[in-house]
Length: 247
Ligand SMILES: [Fe+2]
Image 1 (tube, protein in one colour):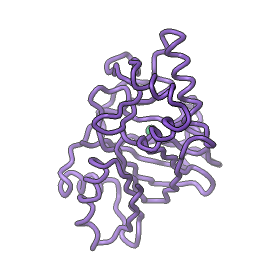
Image 2 (cartoon, protein in one colour):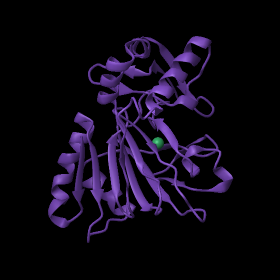
Image 3 (spheres, protein in one colour):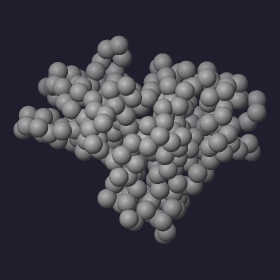
Image 4 (cartoon, helix red, strand yellow):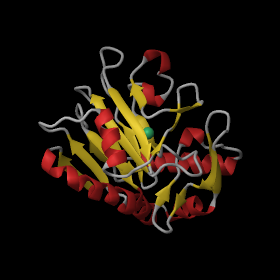
């Protein structure tokens, strides 16, 4: 479920309640910037003080080393465009913290600057993904729940040995196609088949949301897959998204 609210003084006290629904029920919260505008620094204060959330400051930078920072800046930059995050191309569906054994639960997006054409966030609820697999490819579901894979990034400082999908206590995914070690044909085929399944719009149930300047989106990283549509940009930094992680 996607909850959409408009930022105004009278709704501020309801936000902690909506964030609990993100954490516990896997719902998505979109906060539209209204007449009232919050900067990312305002949000950082609000999340720590009013919502009692703790930041998880571990972010992998472009060089694949861990940096401890409040906000990770994602922009279109030619020199970094070999990475999906910094390109203008479509970003495949993934979980951001799949390579952490103890990844943060809540992912907070702050859209500082959006482009006119494209750049929508793509969402695939893991609950729905499990239903789609049950209906359309039971054999693949069975394998995803049983087979453990190694997901790692950078110098292997953090890694996660896990099933790609879990259904208990609730459906969760640990998916990053490019960071999953394909050590044998079996795992390679599993990853390729799952990639094809989730990216195939005719069999999977994607939803899309366009964030505009100063809008935010919060989601439980383990309970939805997310990606981004391609977009047109004339210049570098035409689209600027800040990301932070919370528990
Ligand atoms: Fe992401």
